[in-house]
Amino acid sequence: MQLTAALITALIGASLVVQIGLNASMRAHVGSAAGAAFVNFAVGTVALALYAVATRAPIPSGAQLAGVPWWAWMGGLFGACYVAASTVLGPLLGGAAFVALVVAGQMLTSLYIDHYGLLGFAQRPVDFVRLLGAALVVVGVVLLVRR
Image (tube, rainbow, N blue to C red):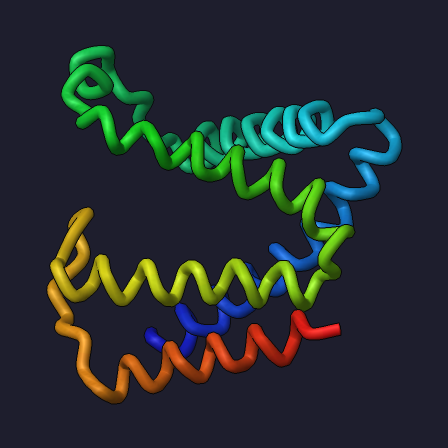
């Protein structure tokens, strides 16, 4: 099961790189990053609605939504920021540099979140090997973004 999850995750990572180019193309056609991001989310919303109907996923009730902590709503905002940033910054930096910088930010934040067991993640203390792995990611970023 972990191999399957790893392969699916790698494919999703690959699709994020392709998404940068698709968003940049959308931006060029609609004339703005905000417009491109809006179209991206509109298409994604339709796709998720179709998926929910196909899988008969229950629609959350008002009471369920009212019980969601305020900070959990930020996931949508962060997603919008990523899409808008990839639309503007991806073409400026290049795909490899943009993704490397995103991964470095994810890696460093993930170490912090794991160390303290925040946001529902299991607590996994930072140790030398994990810090070394993060350092190697940062070194990779430096190599990819240099001109």
